[in-house]
Length: 218
Image (cartoon, rainbow, N blue to C red; front, side, top):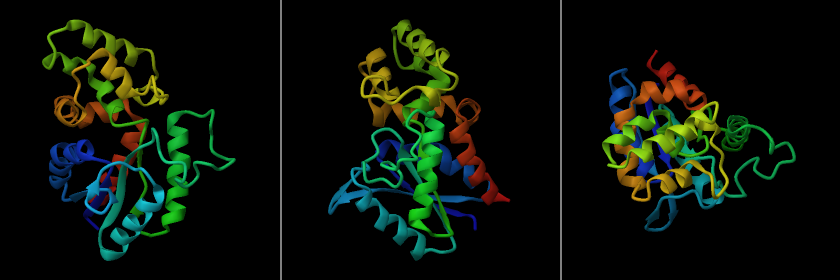
């Protein structure tokens, strides 16, 4: 199989897929289609309920057995009905990567389709941008923005370790340092400036997912 259907959380993720993942993997012979998750008739964006997400994933898996299906959802603020979220085995004190791996495994079991590849961003899309904070310098006149964001990155083993509380999640820290940050505008553009190679080198969980996509090109 060399086709991938990605169910993504919102417009930012869709733009990220369109601007970075699609051209990169097209060169490898893997063709990606992105779809924003539906929340209700006529409305798209946001994983507000797993009960609404599951039918979409199962339908995508079954309507095109010759393609793989994967997800681009944030680990941060997943709904409580997400598979494994309320499990006694959920690694509450674990790292973000450990939490994501546990929930991905539970999601795979629940979807139970052979062409499904579960994936969660640790902890959210903005973590990837902390891999290349110097690129923010092209979008702001205030040098303290870059130094503040770089200090946050330096204080963590990886950008994926920047935690997920309502006050300290990657996007919250970014907004505090750069109040004009607009997720759907700045996010994909800065990601393009950083590039996949830098993000992969800094974010091992993200890289592991892309390694699975790389295998499709083989």
